[in-house]
Length: 71
Image (cartoon, rainbow, N blue to C red; front, side, top):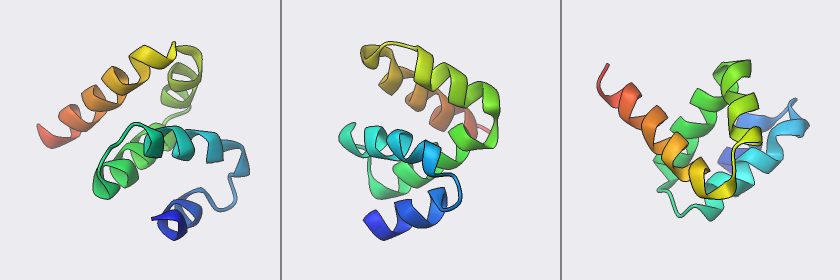
C-alpha cells in the first residue's frame, strides 16, 4: 500500500500528510486510493480536508466516496 500511496502523491510531496491520514482512518486500500484521488483532484477538497477537525475528516471522505459511487 505504501508504494501505491507514494505513486499517487509523487510530485506532490506536500500531500503526503493526506495519504497518511487516510491510511490511519482504517479505510480499505482501494478506498484510500479513491479518496486520495478525489481529494487531490480539486484544490477545494484539499483545503476542506486540511481545515476541518480530525473527527469530521472521515465523514468528509465517506461523503466523497459515496458521491463517487452514486455517479
